[in-house]
Length: 285
Ligand code: CAA
Picture 1 (cartoon, rainbow, N blue to C red):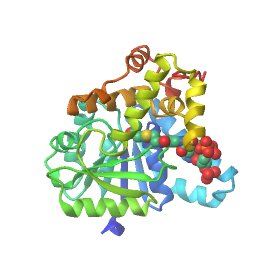
Picture 2: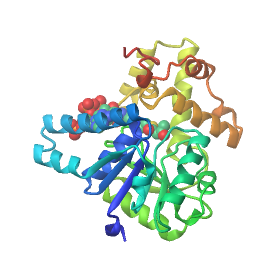
Picture 3: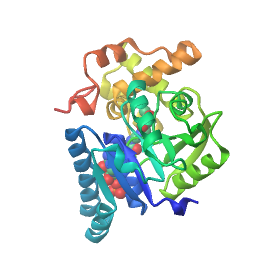
């Protein structure tokens, strides 16, 4: 069934969307990346191009392979270009009004057989699926940042997702080199329900002045051999994205361990979102 996927669509070309386009194209799929904001479209295109060029300069890809991968990617600013897609992954910002706009559009643009996936990390897949008339064919396919590198893909089913849809998406996840885990639609799924409270806790440790940001990060990288310390990782993931996950965990479970750190909240209000805004716990300007 997977081999029948002639065309994959990715909607939203931010860091995650651009990474997802790259992952599919490298695995041999024809991908159309759609971004309606033209400057974001250009940034997304550059993101993919730069990532592939880095792989070539490191000798991980040949120039021919890079050309072939780029040849499988089309960029567009119109969702109608996904009218013949077999599978679409949505990776737009984490706001239900934006998801609603995308999913109602995709539901009318794409043929009945097209599977629609959301890369959401903080919204309910069930609620997103309910925006469509094809709830059996809607899943979460949750990638991790940086998408081309991190091996995990959470395949999230709702009460209405057809078992066949989960099977196909699990198979697709394997085809693109990911290790899929199937999870139920609950706040944080599995990975973020464990990881984000840890990141949030690191923000609290910093806020209480227990150690400097560098010392907190060094403590974890050297104690546990994590590739990045928690404050560096918060900056990479985005403080806004992390706060959104904390908020849904708190909303859903109401347990003290899920209370967002006041510092995290204030930093997000101040626009200190991490790498993408030029400043978070560290300065990137
Ligand atoms: N895009 C593509 N490739 C990238 C990349 C990017 N943004 N960043 C790094 N890479 C590649 C590099 O090209 C390199 O590839 P090769 O091994 O083939 O040469 C490899 O990743 C290692 O990169 P570097 O040597 O430059 O740097 P590093 O060794 O410090 O690794 C890292 C960088 C992969 C980001 C590593 O630090 C890491 O794994 N960090 C933890 C990331 C993590 O925990 N992510 C999960 C976040 S949670 C989340 O995303 C979920 C959510 O919903 C909030």
